[in-house]
Image 1 (tube, helix red, strand yellow):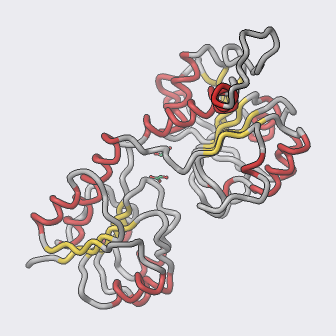
Image 2 (cartoon, helix red, strand yellow):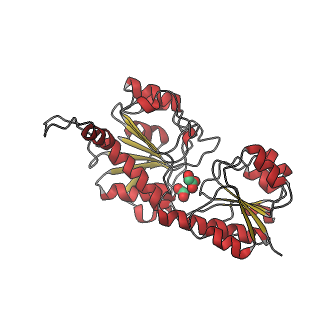
Length: 329
Ligand code: GLV
Ligand code: GLV
C-alpha cells in the first residue's frame, strides 16, 4: 500500500521527508478554506490529513470525511471535534510533551515583560525619548516575593512553576478551574512542599500574576470573565498562553482600560488572528502572535511526531500520540 497524505500547510523540520518516504504527499500551497478542506477530505484521495490549529475539523466535515486519521500539528486539538471523529472511526493525533518548556518560556517572558514594561521601554528608547537615567522612569513590578497563580497544573503549568520558584515567587495553583479537584502529594511529586493548592476563587484573589494553563473546553470557555477580573487585585497581571477563548477578551479590554487589573501578556486571542477592539491600543499589554511553541527545535519535533502519527494512522496502527484511543474499542 502507498498511502496518500494531505498536508494542509507546509511544515518545517523532518516531517515532510518522513511522509514522502512512507507514501505520497500533497502539500497545499495556501491554507485551505473550510469548504476546500471538506472537499479534499471527502474525496477519498487521502488516507490521512495533517492539520493546523486554524483548520476547523468539525462534525460535518468528519461525517463526510474518507480519511483514517487526522494528525494535528499541535498539542491542543480544540479545532477538532474528537467525539465526532471517534464515532466515525477516525483517529486523532497530537504532539504533546515536546513544546512544554518552550511554551513555559513564553509564559515567563510575558510575565517578566509585562512586569518590567520591556516592550514599552524598548519603544521608548527607539522613539528617542531616553535622555538619561531618571529616578522614576518606567517603574515596574517586582517578581521575587510576588505570588504566581496557575490555573491548571498540567505539564506546561508545572514547567512555569519551576521557573517561578527559581525566581523566588510564591506559587499557588488550582488544577481544574473552575471546578475543584484535590491533588495528592504523590501527584505533586517534585513540587511537594513548594507549591500550594487553593480553590479557584482564592487563586483569583491572591495572584499578583495569574497564568492560564487549561485546555479549551466548555467549562473553561470565558473562565476569566468580567466577574473574575473584578475579583482580581487591581495590581494583578493576567498571562494567557493557553487558548484565547478562555478569556472574555472584550471584558479584559474594559478591565485594562479602567484599571480593574494592571496588565496582560497574551500569546493567544479569542478570535485569532483578530484582536478585540481597543486591545492593540493598550500600553499595559504585550501581545504575541501565538508563538508558544515557536523554536526551531520544537517545531522540528512537532513535525516529526505529527508525521509519525500520520504514518501509523495510514497503516491502521495505533499512532504514538493518539488523542482518542476509544476509536479502537
Ligand atoms: C499550540 O497552541 C499547540 O496547541 O500546540
Ligand atoms: C500541555 O502540554 C499541558 O499538559 O499543559
